[in-house]
Image (cartoon, rainbow, N blue to C red; front, side, top):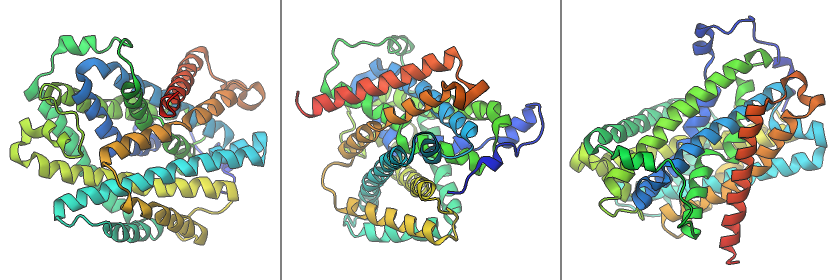
Length: 416
């Protein structure tokens, strides 16, 4: 990917006015839209249905750490003037850059395999044609829309429907009326009954909020916006508003709905469609139909930007021009679509596959968080923009949580 350093001082104006903030928002909203996909939706609903209010602290912690990590990603990209792969190559050489690129590509493409499975499961449920050959139809559609343009309109329609689904969860809260006393109690961590299932659940929730796909994407989307170092405060505001605000509301509303509607009914969201019962108090017999439409749109609008993220990462390493009319861009999108295709033939429950996907994608996160922390504390590299104590403490907590959860989940997986 071409060097983006010339963009570093593109922004004009010294002051950061409210009008400038509003007009400049964008990159982190793309990230929060990807993060608010079917994996996050189902994992937080399943946590609410399974554990009641006891996992509320996990959900809120994941939102806060997501903000910290995404802001560090944006800050690193703005200081370096490039995407994460080029920054690593310039700092440490080609081999570490390849490692970072491959880490990101494996996670992105792994997620796409599972997301295609979810899309086919929902499509089969709605149409009555539960066949894996839907995968070919969707793969062709993804390639045409992403590689040749036109996916923005489809994505916008999908996100409007997903937003309406979230509104339904919020509306259900007013009907179900969560127990505020129990909710406050859920803010206090309780590790007394933390076993393998709880570790997987916590890892999945964290994996939906903080993972390699969105961390790497953030380092490229800020440059697509044309931001430079003078936009650092705007980037912080953008990230806070989209992740602490919109994404935080999204996760909390779905979780509390699960806790006050699904948990009393002993619904643990073991199938994809049990989650629809969470909005039944509001929509009644229309709940399952609207939920299917919403989750279908969530998958469709999440998977397409991840194909672009893979193109950013690979193009950055190979120094290719990643524009829709570029041959290399279209080839990278095609490869990503073909890699996702086997997902159509995966066996297993979609909910379980999503949980495992989120946990596996989370395992590469400590590497990226560690890179951001290292660079943002390097006197020669970050100069006057080095992290302050607050961001270092928050970033250190994010690194600690990602490492501990990743190690504990792997340790439990191998049966040690």
